[in-house]
Length: 199
Image (cartoon, rainbow, N blue to C red):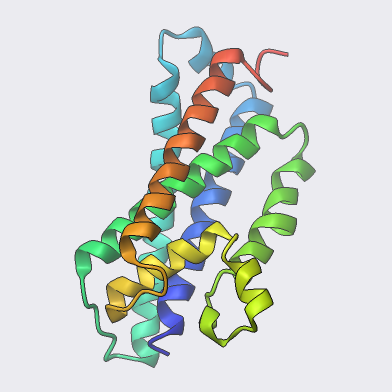
């Protein structure tokens, strides 16, 4: 239970923050509410921050609820470093909120909103070390799993609870921060070019 609980919390944060932003952004596009924002002098970074902030808030609230429920199954959950826990849960929520925004920008119909989450995000999450340690895998599958970025988020978050990391907290944090910067830049560029919005 002590091993699985951090993985379950992270899985709920990932899916909630992603789904909140992709559905909100696409809904705003579909209902033409986004047009009002685009004709205003609101900078693109404010639009990104607004949608991302909503996704982060929902992700953190769902993660907190999952943690509270998990205490009913294991009331002796130990947190080794609360700052590491908070860092990884917030930065992961930011990353997948940005990912949801990217999906929302490219989505052309309602089916496109769910297709990425169903066929890419869910398998990556389940193969991201949520329920098992990568050390238990054969060498080939461990090498394949190392490509999965969710592995590093779960590993860093779990390290905040147990104090042990398979890859090192600095590597985990560095990779996630790099992904956030890249995805934020991509979203800013897409909004600036009007991709999926001004057609």
